[in-house]
Image 1 (tube, rainbow, N blue to C red):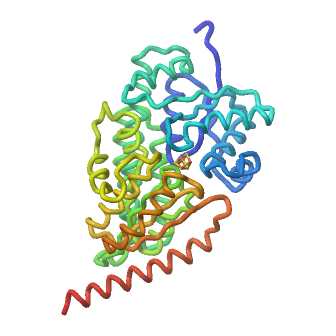
Image 2 (image 1 turned 90 degrees about the vertical axis):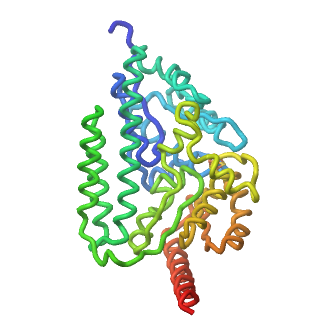
Length: 373
Ligand code: SF4
């Protein structure tokens, strides 16, 4: 079409989010530059150029953007937000950092639409070269189906991993399943990729499936929970230690409950708020309230323990962190909290996880003995 602007779009990494964003923009005819996968170099770049006090996810995003701009991107898509935490300032801070570094780019902030799908779509219409609403709707729909399918496959991998015969087999199977979804671009192929992906994950050879693994729930700040590089692949480490992990937040939940609640309804938000009410009865930003409520729900669901993951200096999660020891005492659920940033090392995390596992095993044994008396 005459007059079309060609932009090269990029965005931050956050788990599998890149697959859905890549789909939206490619389906709308834009050129996409997916940032290289997060590595030590990404973190080093982000940390070097971000203010020291900034949240760790902001620093990783900056690293993603530098790497993408260096490979030709010229337009950054970033989510916006409204208080009370610092997320709403991210895009502005990142714009200034990258401008000071001399990059020529545009940053487009997609503000939460407060329940209106069209509000969000209008913001990207320009980037989509003013494609029709039908085309925009189709691109969003496919991306949404991909996100849901990816979340289902991820949850399946968490159930299989504690039983895998060969360490790493589930992760390999999961990666293969995810790669099928990258190219699926219509409802039928997404359903087909989901079914094949689940088959691949389910066919991982397993041992001793009658063993009852420890069950641990993961709560915390969404970026740290969803992005494996940021949390040092904690789910994989736990799974390979023989633990069944349950993740409290997925991208799909977050989009439904926080971006488009009017479209999808409140989901389990009310249940979480109700659970947390005695300890925290107001929104503190991010997922602070969810961390408290979900921990209680995990305790009520007889989980063996909860792991709380937060970026160092994250205000909403620091509020949750100050409350969780009381919750842990009241509900008799062991809790382990990890404040993570660029200085975190995997060896230290593994040592703490092993000690936590010992504690949970001992608790289980004790409860078994008491139950037998
Ligand atoms: S939730 Fe925490 S890490 Fe995320 S922007 Fe807010 S303060 Fe920073």
